[in-house]
Length: 152
Image (cartoon, rainbow, N blue to C red; front, side, top):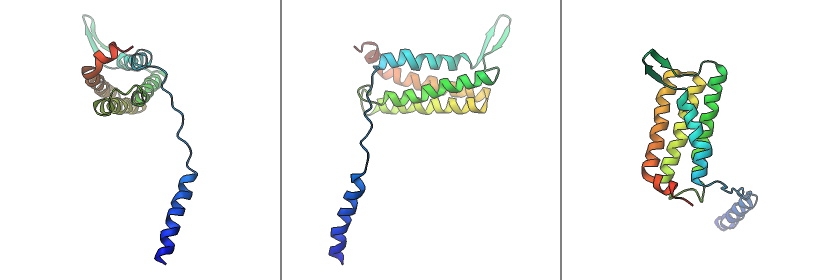
């Protein structure tokens, strides 16, 4: 009986693996600098433009979404930032498998936090998570900005 299982198990494993689909043919088109300029920076700026308070000579200006459409727009910007972190992990964009991956995941996580804050329409949480997003950007830029600026 034991010999029968030794013959059947590999056959079952082979049969199960034979039907597995090929991985999709992902192909990174934009380089890191292009992705930052076209996607990450503008989306993050839109998030930060709708968050916080500015003290002026005439008083305090509250920067926050003022209606459902503006909250949805912030959420959409956060979705783009969240997915950009995943795009930064794709070869050939990934500069290494260590800190680069950690910081790209940090961007994805921060984007998700902003996304949840926008869904909740929570002004304070949007401000706080905007800070988390800013820190994620600073971590990566502190390590890789020269390599990104000088990329060809």
